[in-house]
Amino acid sequence: MLSIDPKSIPTPKLHAYLQSSVGPRPIAFASTIDKDGTPNLSPFSFFNVFSANPPILIFSPSRRVRDNTIKHTLINAELNREVVINVVNYALVQQASLSSTEYGAGVNEFEKAGLTMLASDIVKPFRVAESPVQFECKVNEIISLGTEGGAGNLIICEVVKLHIDESILDENGVIDQHKIDLVSRLGGNWYNRSSEGLFEVEKPLTTLGIGVDAIPQHVKDSGIFDGNDLGKLGNTEMLPTEEEIDIFVKKDFGIKAVLSADDSEKQYRLAKEYLDNNDVQNAWRVLLSKKEF
Image (cartoon, rainbow, N blue to C red):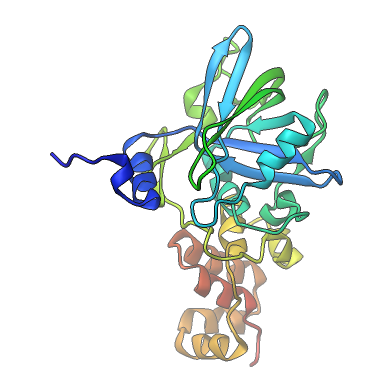
């Protein structure tokens, strides 16, 4: 048995042990607005429900371990005392992950993640239209748990209105756990899909993805790619160069045949195959290839 004094190991290592052993954890996809009214959106897995009367949700944006700075969500919650907590299901997990990218202040993560802003009824922050359940909340209290990197900040939220997509309800009006298809977080890159088990999502925290808003409109309008596909494409930091695309086309008979046929749908579907195999760079090479015959 490995026995550890928490104070004897570096915080990043302790953080990893905690995240890998306490899970799966539900995800609070938190929407706030800044002092200028710009929307902010970010997922947090230190989250759960703690009371039904009153209805209380608590999530915790921790201070960053690497530099002890605080997150925009915490700043906005302290300022406006309002937040919308959206649940994350499998259909939007890649976009939720992309929204955790460390974009600068004033950047709208709804746009970067390719998600739809939906006006709330009571609070000012927007809801995520794609989320199957959305909780409009007032912030009752914020409790700081420390001043060093890795310290949490408990944001205690009272639900003032909730919205449920009727498509996830069963014949009795109860949420069907198969239909809602929730996902949760574990350690590292690992997630859990309630209906199927473990899967991985590459962390975007060390890169600055181009965002779904930078994907060509014809790709988004093709009807071939779902939200998770767009999230993967948007999590690319750099697009392949023309030289890399040329080399790829010369070596890949499949893309040559598609380009020769001048069939856009086949080109999209080939890119989709690469995405399904988590080969994002080759998916981009297919999408950016042009007919040159």
